[in-house]
Image (cartoon, rainbow over all chains, first blue to last red; front, side, top):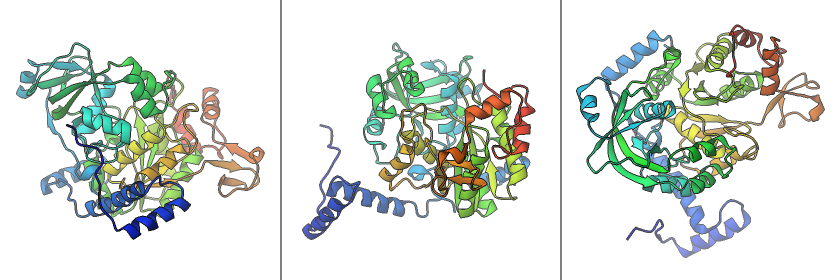
Length: 74
Length: 381
């Protein structure tokens, strides 16, 4: 059986209620789940974007710089 | 250290020769003839422009993209990248599939994953927001087979357009280039037109906030009456040479087939420029739109659905020349009515060039106009 697209996580009830109250006054979020997904995506992406090295060896780097010089970009 | 590629990894597929042993061997197995546009997509995947994709999408990713605007691992992605194949195409688990160009020359080897069927009308409605076959993106979907082949690219030959070799850079090169220049904030500017003053103002407003601007004109299949690729490149070279301070602009071209999917395509444009190492992208009025299918600022509004895109959009209103302000302005900063505004209309420009006229300097820089007028025929017939 295919896994469901969604799963359940627990957050403190008072926090849930605060979010629910807040999104009632704001446009853009349909539900507490919608809001939590948005915020979590933002935070997770911020952590994931740190310290990911580019896949270049020093040899690659020299070759790239040579080409950029030959084309007049450097 | 520049921004990580989309999905965390800059894809680099190994390069091979059409005459290599592995390519020749692969030709004994199943093969698919691909169009010039798909050949460009193969190149864009192979060189990381479409990272994290390493091949053509399988059913799970396809369904996630059309339904939720995300790959199956939750990475933002708004337009499916599919390889349509003939109805009678057959391949099985473990097969290698060779992609051959329109002349029968092998260009890539693919590790076969699966075949699946696309519901064309549903695809059109979900991706383009319309089932109308007058929409060029929809028409392309309707004219293709509904059978799609999924698989990762094992190796590909180098794509080379001899006319633009000297102005073509790939993400691994722009990433090094930006680093060497010491740029940290880089604004991408997507275009498919020769630059008028309105474009220049968007770029320069963006430049005021950043270290550099990456002008990345899209080359490829065009509509009748559009500027030819050569005219766009020559026009931009004239603009950059005469009107930008040194070390503030990088201009290189991107071979890519426009889908005219408006807001969803704006997200794809942002993803590609993130892979080039840009931190920001300029999004103007009716970005990537066609006709009246999308609201004028729909391509800006869609960004609010992607807090994890990893590239920041800069939104611009349309610029125009205001006769009362006696300068370039936008709706946001000019209080004068429409009657005082000279809009930068592409149609008007085209008519002037076709009549051999030089557009007024409030409309287009004289050096840019000259670069276009020096061409025998700057428009697609």
